[in-house]
Structures are given as C-alpha cells and as structure tokens.
Length: 444
Image (cartoon, rainbow, N blue to C red; front, side, top):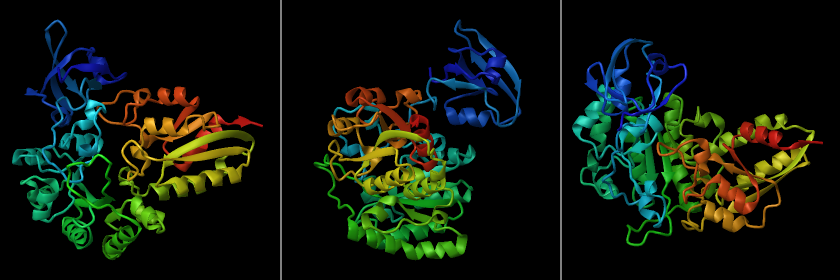
C-alpha cells in the first residue's frame, strides 16, 4: 500500500497521536492522498483532519492543530507514495541507453517525474507531461523544479529527444515562469548539434524568463562503449572544449553586469579538458549547481587552502585516494599539499580507468567497484582508502548509508574485503578531508 507508514519519527505528531508502523494514511481534510505532493499540499495548514486505517481495519479520525509547515512526523513505504513516472523520450545522449546488460534493474528505469525533481533534485524534460500536470505544478507550487532543456529550438529538440512533443518546451517554461515557479535548467551539450550558436540561442531564450529561470548548467555529453545502434555523436576534446568556453564567455560577461552572476555555467569538465583555469569562487556563488559538476574543483581547492591549517602536525598515517582520470592531477595536487604540510601524512593517489563503461568516461562519479578492485588489487600499501561520496548511488530506492552501492552493485564491504583496506567515504571538500585524516591518523 503506497501510503502505508513504515516509520514513526520520535517526537513528531504521529507518535503523539498514537500512529503505528503499518497504519495506512487514507485522507487529509477529506481528500484522498494519492502521492507525496498531495501529502505536502494538504498538510499546509494549521488545522487538519486526518483519517488513518489501523491494521485491524478500523478507521481512526484525528483533528490536529499544528504549525503551518509541520508534517505528521511519519515516513512511508515509498517516498513518493506512487510509482515514478517513466520517460518516453529516446534522447540521443541518454546514458541509460548506453548501459551494459546485467546491472541492477533500477538503473534501467528512466524517470521523468516532477515530484522527484521537487523532492530529490532530479531533472525532468516536461515532455512527458499533460497540460493538467503542468497545472498541478503551478497549483501545488512545486518549486524549484529542475528541467532538462537541452535546446529551445523546437525542431532540434524534437530531433535530440526523439519525441514529437518535445518542441513545446519554451511554451511550458514560459507558463511556469509566469506562475513564478523557480526553474533550474540543464543542457547536455553535444558537439555539432546544440553547441556553438545553438547553445547561445538557448541561453538567451532562457534569460528572457529570468528570474524564474535562475541558472543554467551546461555539461558535455558522456558516451560509453555500449552505443551500438545508437545515434552517432561526437565528444569534446581540448580544442572544442576551449571554443565552447569562449563561446559562452561573452554572454556570461553580459549577465554579470546585468544581474551580478553569470547565469550560465559550464561544468568543470570543459575547463579541465581545455586545460583552462577554473573560474574563481565568486563565479560560482553558493555552488548551487555543484551536483552537475559545476564548481567542484574550485570548492575543493579553496576549502583545502582554507582548512589546511587544521591538519594536526603531531600525527602520522598513510592513505590512498582514488578518482577518475579527468581529475587525477587535481587530486594529486591536493594530496601533495597535505603531505607538504605534514610530511608524516603520506597519500597515494590512483587514477582509475573506466574499463566498465569505456575510457571515454573519465569522471569519478561513474566509476565502478569492479574497475577499482581489478586495478588496485595487491597495489594499495595503506590501511585506508578514501573514496568520494559521489561514487555511491543515492535516491529514493536507497536505504541507509550502510546500503550505499556503486553502479555495478559493489558495496563498501566488497571493496574492503577484496583490497584489504578500510574504506573512508568523503565528500572531497577540504574540511571533510582534513577532518577525516586527523581522525584516522595516529599521534606521534
């Protein structure tokens, strides 16, 4: 049952009212609760009437006075109380279409659900929604919403998403903007299709919807070795990445003058591939697009420089760090800074080649336990292996932190057993990294 309660939060309303695990939420204020958005919207009041069905079939009614933003203090079997809506697009850059067979089933599910955008930050195309779905976003104030735009050129978007309804994107964005729904936009940039002048056109179109459209994250297409039968695409290299940086810079400079921030930002991959300097801290603001790989390097550099003085001088220890081939030089530089600060702290850095998906995939977040184990077997000398948090899957299908798994189903314990190390999961900010090193080192 989608609204069956599976957890009571201590100190919450549910515990006070006598709710129990296994109870079923039937309605709020006489309205059936269909999903998490209904739940959030119907509870947005200081007085609510709630119907609960007990395990023996009895229906209990509650009259509850609460703070306006307070919920019932319970969790449900499914975080969205419903089956996630799947995507009917056939995007030419879709990573799921490039997965090998034999991975866990949830990885092959393409979600395109505005509720997951609101709850977890997932990006949606808006293509698979009916007009009433758009109206529901507006009615329930589902904001912010993250939208995979890719292009505002109707004909090109139909081609890129392989969906005849995909060309309506700008009309829908405009409707949401007029209703003051906050929108974060994402563009997967494909050389020869939506880059160059097409990218500038899309950015300028979206800027017309500012401030509802708050920012744009532009990321390069990633391709695996499993593209047989799929649309042939090009990838970025040093030269073309540098051209894209220059292509966008004129607009960024314009927006910096007009609204005080660049509005469109390119992911770190562009700068590293082009061997260009990463922009300064002020360029990234509050790092709101960091999940798209925008500003990760700058944040890591700056926080290391800031927190390096917190490294305990009276400790010693040895560690290994792993990353993808793209960020190897960056992580090696940071490891060297730490060791130079305290020569008794030794850090080996390993670049893991992505054999699983293909070596065209260079980012750490798409590495697998299989490659890590195969490439580091009998090589690690240290007791501890530091792994970035973004190598592990998160989301509504995941359980506790201990249940975090990698793309190929590898768990932390599998890596520990295979390599004979203790795995330390780190978010790779300077503060977290220094704190963990201090914690796991010994005093001398």
